Image: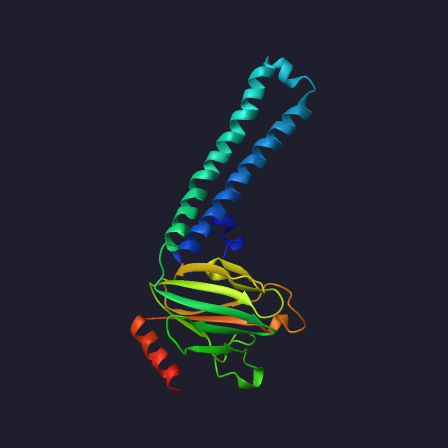
Length: 231
């Protein structure tokens, strides 16, 4: 499955995204095996029109194989698929922090429902505002900060057109639609700053609407909250 690593996520930043990454490689390997099997059968047919009659293969047995093999393939996909769904369901059982995400043209707003008064807008930094080492078209003035190893519930909606809150390294992508509140629970096991971007074509400045999510320690998160509340 290492052959497909170049087509997978660039870097899986959570347990859920690493499972999704593995499942993608597993499916690609499975499909490659099916392709090889079908191609082999096709070339055997090209070898002679009456190949199967010469080998005395009964049609009933062939029909049985054509029913059993697809069933086995579906079972091989079902077991890891249900495991991933079960793991994702466990994350949705409880949450220690709720963050409301609102998409606008063309910036994001964050409201921490459990911390009254903590809300802010997040705009992309222009090229002349970047510090040394920062990435162009990715950095935000006010990135969203969440604690590590805490189930965070994101309530995502839009103030105007359809947006999409997407973090590829976390395997997170949820549409933000006006009048609809979509929820997503997630646990972030790694510290760092993770970037994403609106993945719906939401207007002229669609490509200038990135997402920056900073995952920090719980104590650092409390200090950040106090700083922003009294700023």
